[in-house]
Length: 396
Image 1 (cartoon, rainbow, N blue to C red):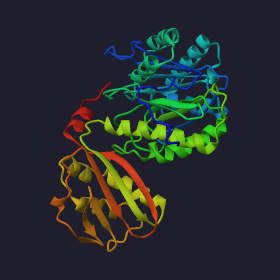
Image 2 (cartoon, rainbow, N blue to C red):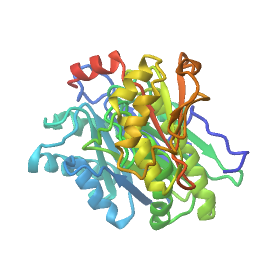
Image 3 (cartoon, rainbow, N blue to C red):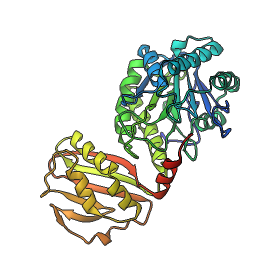
């Protein structure tokens, strides 16, 4: 990405030309908070791509959106919070189909041109009267600009404490923007819980698909809050072509990756119960797959996460998690550095662990395997009392 392209967190899905959005209160949530978002691509192109959860228990909206995206085109995306529509059987899939049909009717499009996303509690049918009337309300509210962007990012929230969005414009005049929601049940294998990213670049659906997979592999797939891969995880990328500009694949992938990385850092900072933002950096692995495996195992280990919550630089827990990862590890070559303090060198204790200061919010754990040249960084958080409290009481 050019140094002149800076990411702006005040703008989102309508920053690129050709898009409108709305976020409204449909009455799906008992709380009365906003709960339905509509994003519309006014073209001239309707290119699209997506990545989805790898969980075998997939919500009805995921199954629907995977089907419609086989033709690499979307006119609109409708998203609801307040209910996942997962484990709801054929009736839940019919509800998703009905939602797409309703959006298609108000936009004079086809249901095959509409993706559907849901998030919330698993196992309950959606209040369809509220959903369908909400689509009418959202269609009437469609607009562009920062107010519309923020409203769209807000209506998809569940346990998030604030909306998350980002946008950037390339010096040549085309843009990428989007929003994301998610605070728990975040683990890779796709992206995060729900995200819509847009661009006004002139690109085909196949180009979007290739760029999206490269970008997510380096960003969303490297965030792991709690190891839980959601039933509803969806990331959609839409292109309007409204700028009239066709960037190179490398240029587009770079800007898309920059926006995605910013969204991922916002997710990490707002994860459920977070008090520490942690980067697990693995170096010297025999392969990138090994580096990712070690980083993910350490990131998900509850003993590591609770130690970090207590600001305890317990490198022994990091070594334990590294050794059980299944990756190629030589204990006599292992090194561990926490916030700049080398605590383990070639498998032996080095500095006193007290020399690692973990009192701040940001923590970096560097694991040197010294077996090759591959590296990977996994972003995670600590495991706090607040995380346990929130997830033991979550029901909406």
